Each structure stands twice: as C-alpha cells, then as structure tokens.
Amino acid sequence: MEFMDAPRALGGARGVLCYATVDGDIEGFQREARAKGVPLFGATSFQGVFTPRGFERGAFGLAFEPADRVTLAHALIDTSAPRARRDVEQAVARLEAELGGKPDAVLVHATPGFEERVLEGLASGGWGSPISVAGGSAADDDLSGAWRVFDAERSLSEGALVVAFRADATVHAGFVSGYFGTKRRGRVTRCTGRTVHTIDGRPAAEVLDEWMSGALAEARKTGGSVLAETTLSPIGRVVDRTHRVPRYLLSHPHELHADTQAVSFFTELEEGDEIELMMGTRGSLLDRTQQVVDRAIGRGQRPPLGGGVLIYCGGCVGAIGDGTGEVARIYREAVGGVPFLGAATFGEVGPFDIQGERVARHGNLMCDTLLFGR
Image (cartoon, rainbow, N blue to C red; front, top):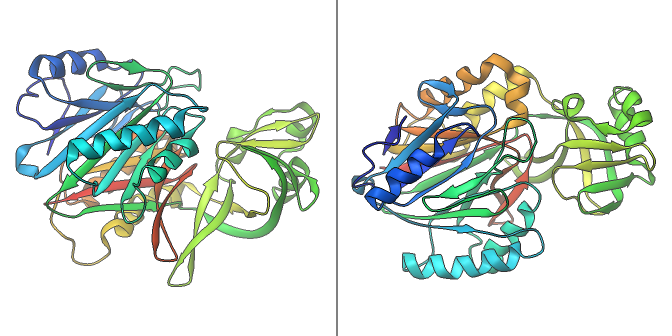
C-alpha cells in the first residue's frame, strides 16, 4: 500500500481510499482516478485527516497495489433512511458477484442519520458473521451538512459507500471505546428511534442531569445541544465481554428537549436497554489508539502488516485538542510504520463478538480500525 498526499501516480493501483476535509481537493483525486481508470472511494472527515505525518487538512489517499494481494469492489449508493436497508442489500448482491464470493472485510461510510439501516442491509444481504465490518459516518467541520461520500464519478451529500475486500492475508478489525463505566445505571423505558423519553420511568433529561451532578441544569431549561457537555460523559451499553471485562457501545447525547425533557442521541436505542453513564479523559482517548490495534491483532508479537485504516470519532478530536497529532503518532508506531489513512467521523462502526457471532454495531465517540496483513 502507498500513502498519497496528492492526486498523482494513481496508475496501476487496484483502488484508492481517499479521506478529505470539506475544502480538500477531492475533485483532483476524482479527475486523476478517471483519467487512469482506477477505482476511487472515500468520505469527508472532521477538521483533518490522520496521516503518517499527523492530522492534516486537505485530501489524501491510500492506494492498494497489486503486490498487496487484495481484491476489492465498491458501491456508492444514493439512498436515504427509508430506502437504505433495501438499497444496501441490493448493492451487496452486486458486489458479491463482482468479487466472486463473500468478502473478508467491509469498510462502510454513510452520511449521518441512518447508519443502522445500512448495517441491516449488509446483514440481510448475507454479510454478517464472520465478516468484519468497520467504518464511520462522513463528517464536516461544523455539523452544517457539508459532509460527502464519493467515488471517482460522483459525490453525495446523502448516501452510503460500501467497500468490500477479499485478501490473501488476514484482514484484522478492532473496535474500542476508551471510556469507563461509572455504575450510574438505568433502563430505557420509553424511546422512539434516537430519542429517549424516559429512563426508569422518569424524564430522561432529569435522570441524565442527576447522573452528571447538575451539569445539564441550564440545558434542561432552555433545550438545545449538549454535545460539548456530554463528549466525556456519554451513555454506554454493555454489548459483550472479553475475559469478563465488559465492552461498551457508546451513544452521544446531542439534544435536550425542554418541553418534554427527552434526550436525543446520535444512535438508536431500544426500550429495555440497560444503560450506564460513562466517563472518558483526554488520556484515555489517546490510549485507545494503541488499544484498538491491540484489539485487532493482539498484544505481543505482531503479524506482518501491509497497511491500515483508522477511524476516530470527530467529537473526541474536539475533546483532545492538539492531541490529534499524538493519535497519528501512536497509531503509526502501533502498526509498525506501514502506510495508513484515518478519518475523524460523526459515528463509528465496528465488530463485536456476541455469543460466537461477529456482529457489526454503530456507536458514537469510538475508535475502529482495519489492518491488512501482508
């Protein structure tokens, strides 16, 4: 694989993954890819892209070369929430025919709002366990809706990108939160999609504010965004356990509704979900960069790698401030200096192992990776 900081020398690549800020030269990569007949696919990233040099604005690529022994196929799907499951399921059939079989791993990028429907489409199309699914939601600089998913021909403000990989060597996947449980727990007793109305029969905003020791008192009066207040205090659900250690799927509260005292999140929840207030620190958000690699390939002696893809939550980028360059450095060293590319996303997708089955889930404020063996 080869890291690319400009749209040049694409000829010969089997495909190029491109991550870019909204002002990056996506069109330059698209023109070069069309001219050379090379598949291009990618998504926009929050305020920067993780590269071997740090966290940089612009457009960057990761080229898959013939020597990488990776076969890939992609679909850029013009879809929205009501149609996403069906449209993705249909795309799965086309991609599987193009690949000549099921993939070893899948990278998925959707625009925010219907990520669960995309994962349902992958599963109903037959791409469930043991296939590892990773990725994240396209992002922009300020939640204005300028995000895009794209390929060499098109750029969509609403849609999904699915990239399927078959590889001669193992493709490793990891998914971690980097947050800790606080034992402040409850059960969702009424919710609608991404809005939780009550927890333990009480107004959700009241309970969440109580768990956070009054940090949301003003927002309960006025309503509105609570993204900044809750970035280090999201909600977690225990999804599986590794050696009796719980693994959490996180949900980021983003809006309080003053009239109903409901709370809206960036993921869907269900009635009956057991939830817990989580706690993160700047240090834990940096440490998880190493942890996600350990989760993917284990500790100790590492298998030989050819390259990697890092997905890191955009909200956590805001929380760590100037630590974004440190995230890139930790990841670069953890993967042994091989080429990589990383996006800061508005939602993350990764695998959990639940009762012997590998299941893809959509969460917030998390970190995931795909690592390609050599």
